[in-house]
Each structure stands twice: as structure tokens, then as C-alpha cells.
Amino acid sequence: MTAILIAAAAGLFTTLLGTPVAIRLFRVWGWGQRIREDGPQGHLEKMGTPTMGGTVILVGMCIAYLVARVEFESVTVAGLSVLAVALGLGLVGFLDDLTKIRRQRSLGLSKTAKMVGQAIIAIVFAVVIVHYGHVKPDLSFVRDTGLKLGVVFYVWVFVIVAGASNAVNLTDGLDGLASGSSVLVLAAYAVISFWQFRHSCSLSVIPPPSGACYAVGINAALDTAVVAAGAMGAVAGFLWWNAAPAKIFMGDTGSLAIGGLLAALAIVTSTQLLLLVLGGLFALITTSVIIQVVAFRFTGRRVFRMAPLHHHFELLGWPEFTVIVRFWILAGLAVAFGMGLFYADFLRLGGTA
Picture 1 (cartoon, rainbow, N blue to C red):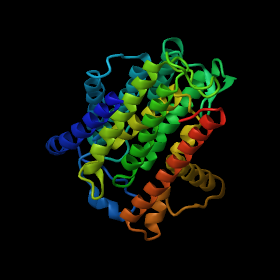
Picture 2: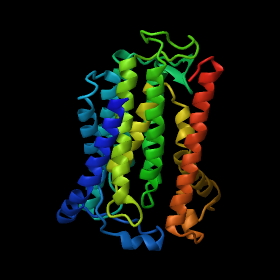
Picture 3: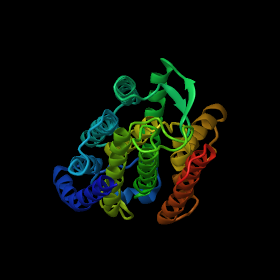
Picture 4: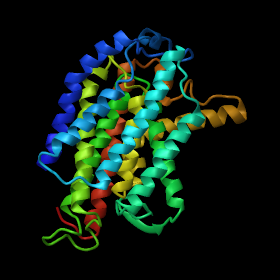
């Protein structure tokens, strides 16, 4: 437990104190945000705000993980692979952000280039956790369902990683919306991982009833909890400067990294489909984009005034801060419901607190 708290604190203070330094440096380097021309007109005043703040978040995650080693020395494939996914997708996002800055436009890497990067990272991750991380290639909801996917598992991992990273990326359209929502989901995964550590079937002491315990190594579960807690702290510290009016944006560097991290956490904790519930806000916003695209392609008409969904409410006249806070509430409700499902399953199988 101490290692988890140390990781959260280290991540928090690294970004809380390091982000102002990054803001000054990024301004000197000309790393300013490009704004889409067809977006809400009120966003044009954000042009030039330092971006690529995701680099600070990633540094915070890494420092948190290293500092936590003082208390918890066991490094596992599960923890390292989850962190590696965040770093890998952060690199893809960094290249995307850098391309936007150099071209002086709001479009960066092509969709194909992003997808190739996501595919490579997802497949390498899947191979590593299956062959070295003792993760079963099964479908899971709140735990393994027993449905074996076989080779399809590798494609499924790509779908989860690409879907989650793109979902957070789409949500990152208002000051602090993606970062605030991500803190809640990361906190949930810190609790889930720690819960699996406390109720692991491999405990040397008397474990919970066989049906309720989790088939995960205690070191792997604790290591994953450390990564989740460190990321939660890092994103929370960044949110201090990213909250409206934002002094810095995370950019694709941060949004792709955080989304990939959430996907990796869902996979190693065997809560793949539960991520749809915990990240309900991200799923809702992504669905709004899909509906808009499909409707316009087949009918020539738009369902929303603008997609993603948060821009629709802006164009309806909601102040930006109102949209952000109300969407944070939705994110919190989704996390609460998801955690309820996770705990209800544990109780159903005979577990006790």
C-alpha cells in the first residue's frame, strides 16, 4: 500500500512542479497549439497555447514508478509492459504533435500512420503479456469469462488499444476535460489492481473463496497498481495547469498515451469490457463521432451541431466550463457504476471485504 501512495505522490508533485517549467520551455521552442478552423469560434483565442504537455505526464509516470521501487522492489512484466504501452503511444502522439507544429496546421500524422503505430505497439504488448506476463488470451469483463480467443486475442488487443487511445484523443477538446476524466478512471484501476493484489489466489495466507479470488500474481497486481497510481498522480498534477483556462494542453502526446495506458490496464487486470463502463464518457464521445460520420455519409445530414459531443453543447450555448464540469460528473458516475459491477461480482462469488 505504501508503494502505491508513494507513486501517486511522486507523480503528482513531478507534474505539479514540472509543468510550469515545461510551459516556459515550450513557449521558447514555439510548441504552440493549432486550432481547427471549423471548431467553435471561442477556441481561436487558444491558438498558440503551449501543447505536447503529455511529455510532462509521461516523465511523471516514469519518475513515480522509479521512486516507488524504494518501497516495492519487485519489477514485473505486467507493470513494465503497461508503462511501455503508454510510452510507445506517447511517442506516436509526440510525432503527431510535432508534425502539426512544423506544418503550422491542425492536422498531423495521417490516419494510416497512427494506426500502424498503434498496431505495432498493441501486438508487441499482447505477445509479451501472453508469453511472459501470464495473461490468458481470453475475453474478460469484470474477470476472465473463460472464452478463449486464441489468435484472435491479438487482434482484440489492437481494437482495445486503438479504441481507447483514440477515444481519449477525441475527448481532449476542452480545457481539462480529458485529464480530469482520466484521473477518475486511473484511480479506479489503482483500486482494482490493489484489490486483486489483496485477494489473489496465490496468497500465502488463506485466500478468498476460490471462485472470488483473482488468478493473478501478487507482485504483478501490486506493480500494476503502482503504475496506475503513479499515472493518476501525474495526470492530476498536470490538470492543475490544464484546467480552464488552460495554460498548457496535453496534445496527442498525452491523450494517446493515457488512452493506451487505460487499455493496457484493462487487459492485464482482466477487465477488458469493464473499461467500456469505467470509461463511459470516452465511449459516449466516441459514439457521437461515429453517429455523426455515419449519418452524414448516408443521409447528408448531421445529428449533432458538431462532433465530438462536447462541441455540440458548446454550440447550443453552454459555457465551456459548464460542459466540462457536467461531463466530469458523467465520467464520475460511469466510474462509480463500473466499480459497483466489479465489487458486486466479488460478493456474488462469496468474497468478503
